[in-house]
Length: 414
Image 1 (cartoon, rainbow, N blue to C red):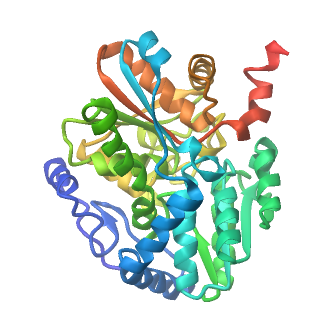
Image 2 (cartoon, helix red, strand yellow; image 1 turned 135 degrees about the vertical axis):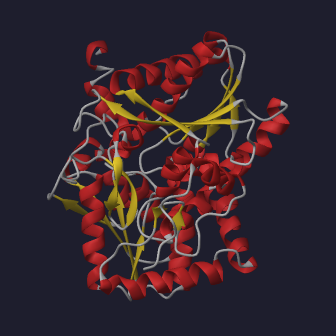
């Protein structure tokens, strides 16, 4: 397909970001994004793109979607002032509480939207991939709610470290298919879901869980997840007396972060900081920080920043967090970094676990390990910026992480 220019300078990219003129008609976020797919999937993606244009902002569809957000998911989620952490860090700290959404994370915002869209498009079944299991749980729940069968692909490694979510998916009626190829984590699960979709592109709808993949998925996921930032922006004005000085969120594929960031992009006085999984070090295979250490390339349908070697081979990643353990990132995040509107940094496993423990003891909230990366990043930022107002996207709750926490934080306490 035709693509837009890859040579726009940072000033032009920044202007495009601030004026919200992305993605373009070709599904490009500046030089990133696009659609790199097998020929057999072209009709399915064309049909999806047409469905997005027809239904996404249709009054009737939006009314149905918003009713589900309100009456089934429990939105708006709370904005909580973290009183103890505020005193300890010397800043005014606020949490946007996606951990309070039905099924325990932000993923449900996107899943219910896509499953409603799948029904409009006449799909007979829904497939999904999952890493930490939250998107799988959300997709299973959404399919049960709407009345469509659901199959979830999950890497064997992730199934072991996220066993509670595997059981939840099964109870919600989904078929959970283990993926034993590749790195047996999220990347392999996406590959397997794409293989399934190729075999039945007409009757199957692929409910992609993050802001990655071929156009229109990065745009579609952003639109469903932007409810997070829209709510948070309004809540900060009312409860905190003004916009935050900075909004911080964890970044794997990037759906939680883009949902928080997008409604703040035009507020140029608000800094935006994405926190990637720094793992155990800076070398290839030691982390999952695609924006910090990656290079541009194509993976699973789009052009973005990837962790790859000098020969262009995608590398295995490492993170204590299953939800951040992915060798790429959504193309919109790659644009936001290239334009200079959002900064990105890595947090290592130990720092994230330490921040999780501090949040539990200080605020009575058990965050997901993914969210703990954002907490650790916020704590580090607060040390350099005393007295500022910090908004942290708490992407999910940590119940699912108890097997990992039993082997790490709790090992010496039992």
